[in-house]
Length: 114
Length: 109
Image 1 (cartoon, one colour):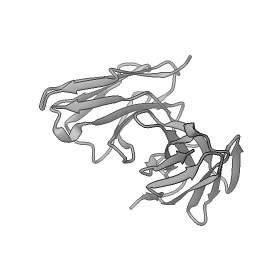
Image 2 (cartoon, one colour):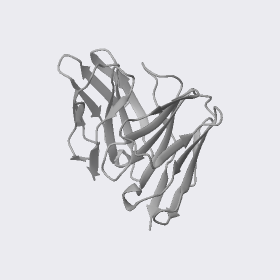
Image 3 (cartoon, chains in turn blue, yellow):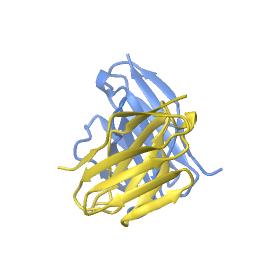
Image 4 (cartoon, helix red, strand yellow):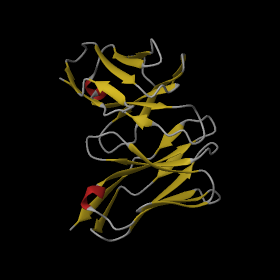
């Protein structure tokens, strides 16, 4: 089945220790997104890629970086995680931007910062 | 600024009908989405409205009024598995999704 896969599902890191979250998709979608979601809050868009075109949200902290080496894979790097970065990180894809292009989500990675 | 408003929590009875409202103020409009999110899981797509009116899909229906900046999600014949959060999201003029915080729906037997 075509899908969006995130690894790991649960990640524990220490304060200040870099961590990388990964996402892959078999849908062959052009657009990939990274969201941060905290409990009972709306998902917050961090970045999105339209093909190789990288789009950084204005309020995404510099502590967060992203890479998309090819169509199928996308990575989220948190250079120095703080306690406030503990959250669910959701990867999503859509076939294209705009219109009726629904986003398909992976299962998420829950990040704990000790 | 851009804003999506929906109730924080609602309670309904198994077998009944519930309506979850969403009002929005955004820079432009390119459609409204409803997603379902079970606790600890990722959102899953339910519906998309871009024109005024009602879209029906099985037990779920979604309504849109662009002039009022208003939508609702109607769930019929409620089942226990419908207990989840329901998120309203609007695509703005830059094709970005503006998300609401979600409505937690609690179903009681």
